[in-house]
Length: 551
Image 1: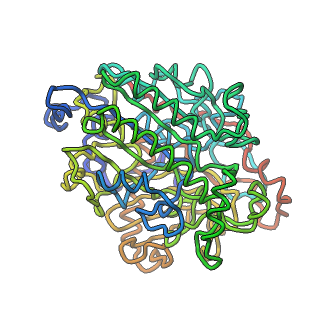
Image 2 (image 1 turned 135 degrees about the vertical axis):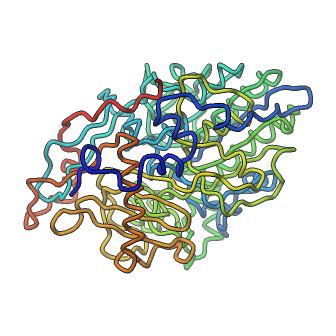
C-alpha cells in the first residue's frame, strides 16, 4: 500500500487538482490570499436601504435525505420546512463533509475539510482535550488497518463563520447542539455573543427531549419539549435584534437519539403508519414533527417582525438518517421498527455511501432566489457554507482565512459551479453492522471517497485479503443506490479518480489508515460489547502540522 502522504509522485498533478476543486482551495494550498480575479464580487446588501441581510442557519441532526415531505416522504409531516422550500431553492445533490456530526459541524464553521481540521469522528464531548488527529500505534489482530484517533476540539485559531460575520457587524447567537468542544472551545469562545443552552453534549442524553433536561439544568417546566423551548429562545433573539443584522445559528437537537417524543404525536402517527411502509416509526415521525414545529416558530417570528424579506434562511442536516432496526434506546413499543429509511440511497448515518452524507438542503432568500425552484445538478458540500454566506452578505473574509469550500452563490441563480469534485475522508471503523438492504459484504471502513460529476470512487483502506486498498466505483446517475460496482470493468476511471484522492489526502494533511502489522485473519473477533476497545486503539504519531487556517 502506498503512503500517499509522504511518498510517490502526484500522478494527477498539483495544478490540475487545484483547478478541479476551485479557486478557494487554490488560495489555501498556495498559501496566499485570493487575487481579485479569483473571487466573485460581493453581492449587494439584501434590502433596498442597504442593510445587510440577516442569516438563519438551521441544522438538523441525523435527518435523512428523504425525511422531509418536500424531499419525498409520504409519512412524515413537515409543513413548515416544505413552506420554506416553496420560498426558495431545494438542492438534491448536497453533501455533508462526513457521515457523522462533529466533523460536519466543524466544516460548516470553518469552510475546511474535516481531514484538515483533524476532527473526523464525533468525539468532541469526551474529557480528553486533543487538538491534533493521530494514527493508532497498534490495534487488535482482528483489524486490518490502523485507524485515526480524531481530534476532540475545534481549535480557537480557526476563524469561524460566526467570527467572520461578527467582524462584519453582525450580532451572533447559537442555539442548540454544538458538539465541537466545551469551554474554552464553546460557542462563546468561537464568535457567538449568545449560546443557549451552553452545552457540549452530543445529544439530549438519557432523559431526552422532555424536561428536566440534563443538557440544560434548571430550565424547563416538567414535560416541556426541548425543541419547543429552544425555538422560543431563538425567537427572542430575533425580536431583540430586529433592528440590526444578525446571524442565528439554530442547530437542532432533533432528530438525534434518544428517540423520544410527545405522546400525543406518537399516537397520531401510530394511526397513520403503514405496516409495509419503509418509513413507519411513529416515535421518529413525532420527533420530525416537533423539529418542523420549531422551524415554524422561527419563520413565524421573522414574518411578524417584518424581517422575512431581508433574511437568508438555510436548512440542512449534518449526516444521514439512522436506518437500523433493533434499537434499544427507542420507545419500547417500537424497538424493532427501523428508525427511518434512506432508500433509495444505500446505507445511512456513519456509512461512506450516499445515505451517510447526501442531505436535504434548502436555501431561501426573497428577491434573490426563485421561489419553489430546485437545483438537481449543482454538487455542494458543507465546506461551502462559510464562503457562500459571506458572499451573500457582502462581508469580506478576514485576510488570513483560507477555504477548502467555494461559494455556491452562482448555483442559487441556476448557474453552473466551477468545482467538479468533492471528498469525504472517514478514517475510522464503522461499528454498525446491520445496514438497511445493503449488498453483502458490508465494508466497515475506514474509507475515503471522491465524487466527480456522476462518478463516485470509494477507497476502503487495507480491505483486501493482503491488506492493500480496495475500491468501489459507481455511476450515481445510473445507479443512485450504489448497487453496481464498476471498478473491475473500468480500471482507467478508477485510476483517474484514485489520483484525485491521493492529491486530496496530501493537500489536506489527512491522517491516512495503514496496514496493521499485527493483523491475523484467523484471530477470533471480540464479543459485541468489546468492539469499542478495538476501535479506540492507542494514540500515536502526530501528523504534520498542516491544518492551520491562517497563514
